[in-house]
Length: 535
Image (cartoon, rainbow, N blue to C red):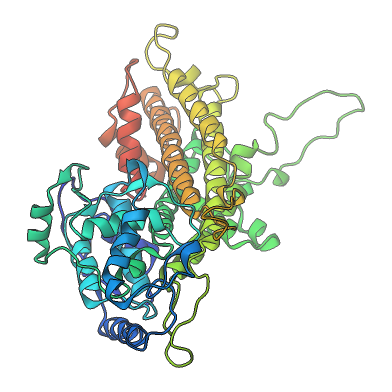
């Protein structure tokens, strides 16, 4: 299903996502891209209201509760007056709104907003009905808060980016449309049908004290990574066909012998897409017999008994990526449906409990793992491009898959170099952000997760991996065109790969001679990010 809305538009062809403790990252992606709205379930609404009542009781009874009658961070030992509670919440937002850098994308800012609403909806946070209602209205609109992407260490939650979201809700920040342009506050609040938020009780802390920025970005990453994996499988089959690869390495027996779930799924999908592919060698090499040969005889078989790793190990590489992505999705889904506040207001027991659910270590580790997995996926695709374009290795295809006179035309020579450059750039982002803990906040936040940096790095890896796969798609389609040009005496690609090539050519037309491929790569990467592979 396509998860990209037309720029500047908001539409809901599918039913709303119900926020009730079981929201998935894929659903967050659909809402974030404007394909679906979202609404709290009656149960979630009641749980959130009950938490607000418990929190209000703490205020009325003048209990010692962090951020309600105290200062923040190292100033938590300073007691504040009851009449200053609204000023306390407003000043929390004021001092935290220090983000820098480019704004988060429209979709990422919306995903963050939805993740915050989901956390509050678990019924531990104490946010007011007004704050919850405004979050819900924003998610169902065409707008997103304008949020600088840098400035959070992901420890006491994503305080900095979430403070910019809160500032926007207060009418003092800013909003953006789907195309990234600024939207005037008056336009936004008129569309929402609500006035700007006045922070009450614990609203400020309830809005900012959680892992919602990293979780929102990670939700988008989970959905995008799943799609890239599907494209990697589809294009691997196309590459294998062009190279006349052997099918035996994709046998189900290998997954029985080594039962990693991702490997089994990857090999099954490769076999499915290879059905009817005449260019693939379906006979295991061991079914052939060889004549006895004298000692020292240097005779060689007509071809090797097995392919290079780019084909032979594709189920293992893609399968490992699948398993890493599955673990990432599992962690992110759990985080999305958790209360990541401090303090929390439990049902029964003490009126409030102080702890550290805002620590983003889980999402940080999962995002770093996805970062590494995307490098492996892009590395496989880049090597497949390299093999397809190397006339010494590609089984008789033209050098760099050129069409037209050789030398006068260079084909995908430049595109292959770009794939290599993209992979090198991805490797420079391989250092795990979760290993970068630095004591800050007057040694109050003396251990931090850097989870949002990890999630943003993973998002950048996904974007670059998508471009590498777009180049591979160009190469597979170009190879398919060359086979068709040679006529009936050369077997063509199988049905699934022909469908992929037709899809590619709908976005990037045939190249019978050299042309600039940069627009094709960009258009294909965007289209692949929004569509599952055909076939």
